[in-house]
Image (cartoon, rainbow, N blue to C red; front, side):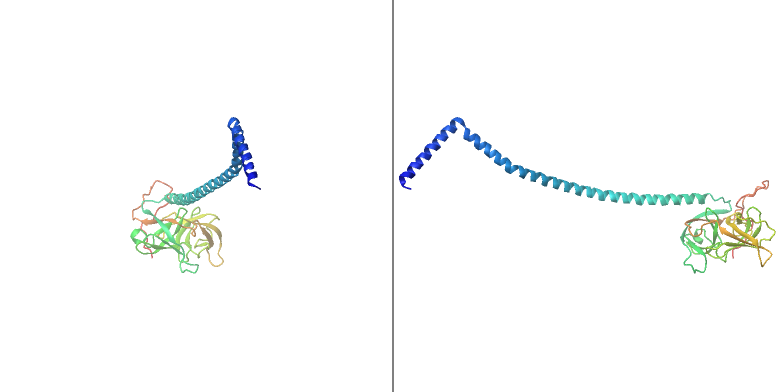
Length: 296
């Protein structure tokens, strides 16, 4: 291409540009077209970017909310666990309160002072020499040897040995236990002795002609000078003539659940003589002997 042709082409292009420029100045058509085209292109580019931004923003907010919910859930779990522990403690307190109220209903006269105690341990092993429990009172706090021990249902045993602040209690099921008793209805007198853990108690020296009934309660007579009169001990489960003696062979089950003891009462002998109404036909339920024998 020669220089002349280049100059002609440049002149034509310049004339076209000046013509379009003049036409645009009067009509603004090119400005409108370029503006619309720019808006369309900008919208096409920004729309997916905005959508992506919204998606990322929603994801972040949901993640943050999830973290907040998780933290709140952990706080609520801890609060529920604390409430459950309080509920368990309250339930245990209510059960203990119920047992203590039953203990406080035990009727005792002025001679026998009730002292609350807690069981520290039961029999140590199935082959232990004695069927005994340990309580948290000793001779310095009212648990002298020979002191009777009861629950809300009846007699448990007596203190065998005592230190200053703890003591071991020989239970009524121990073979070394001997208690002067009588049957509650027929007033048949005898000696109640233990036969070992989880075995029935034995009632000895009851004559054959005594009308002992099944289910009849056996209570302390107070004649041994160790226990108050009228403490419930056991229930008769069998009564038959003995094949070897002239007495009845009587077995009885303890009224107290000796395997599940927690709170108990000691009956401390104060030496105060009980008040007896001579005009009354019925005796008091708990009347200790006038001259208690010395515990051996």
